[in-house]
Length: 95
Image (cartoon, rainbow, N blue to C red):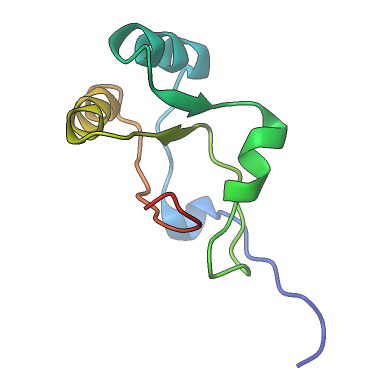
């Protein structure tokens, strides 16, 4: 099987994602969790477009790097309120 396979997000299979105002979410994250590391620039997000399954690549809207349980709880509440899907990931020292 020669050649690289790249699978992208497909609404027909994965469902339609809700519309999210990225700047509004970013502002809300900064307001509620001012010390949280939030990656949002294209060059920062590129390393997070896939994990061990490198055939499936999609660039995330944001990447957050919480350090404490309370940050995770606040993040999940905020994402739920904004209908933002969350993908938990642990790798390369980010677990």
